[in-house]
Length: 129
Image 1 (cartoon, rainbow, N blue to C red):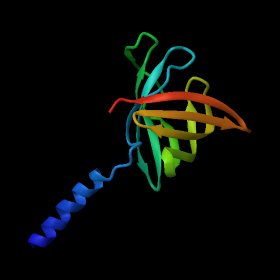
Image 2: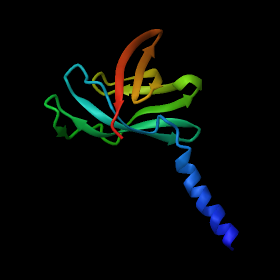
Image 3: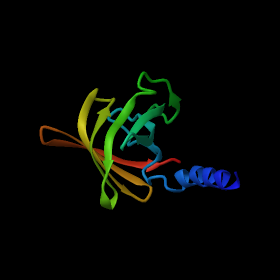
Image 4: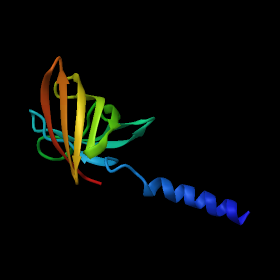
């Protein structure tokens, strides 16, 4: 019984000890209207997804948004060197979905979206938590 309890405790501790570095809450770059958001990135199946959890107006104050709870990033697969690729990114300010990739460097996440070979720099997101 003691061995079972120890194994269960190690399993619980082990999952948090091996969290992917991209997991967490990220502040997006300001959009064309000066608005930004907080996106929580976490595993979704074999990839990573990000959901908008807070929205902020151009004045920096938290505001209501129809996009809160919406998946902004999905199906991002982790590769070596901090690259996350093969996923999709939704841009609320343009109401468009792009083929996306992200590159993690410390507490910075460079985000980019492309459609038909034309790419849009999504800017650099910064880690909130």
